[in-house]
Image (cartoon, rainbow, N blue to C red):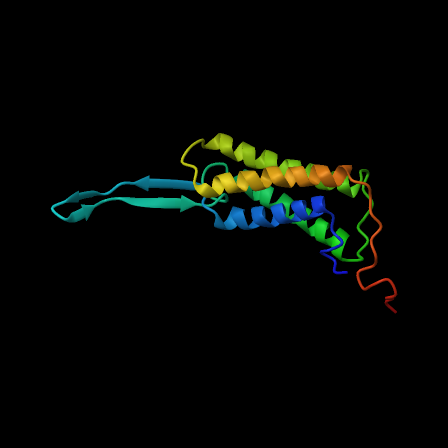
Length: 160
């Protein structure tokens, strides 16, 4: 059984939403501004458009912090589920830490919205939907019972 098949449905939702959001922060147009051109006697004057991703525009500090938290969340998600690395002990469970990180990503993106409301591109809606689904997946993972996973190299592997 592959490592991806061992993931629960909620872990798949969390991972997929995190990857979509990571790509979306860089690639999807958070802002879109279009200015129409004017045509006089067959000659067009002016006009143009601007597309900016989530890391640009007003409040970009909060989207950069959200990106850093998202990368840390995805790194711990991968480390806990696909490797045999022992992560340090925290005063809270790692599941709770993943949940709080997902909530922080969504909250930071909402704070970014408060700096400039309007001129949203299609990427804004997809990014916010992915952030909401990320929180949903993290909540579902935090409520599910802890599963015992086989070691990454298989049940009989040992490193010497």
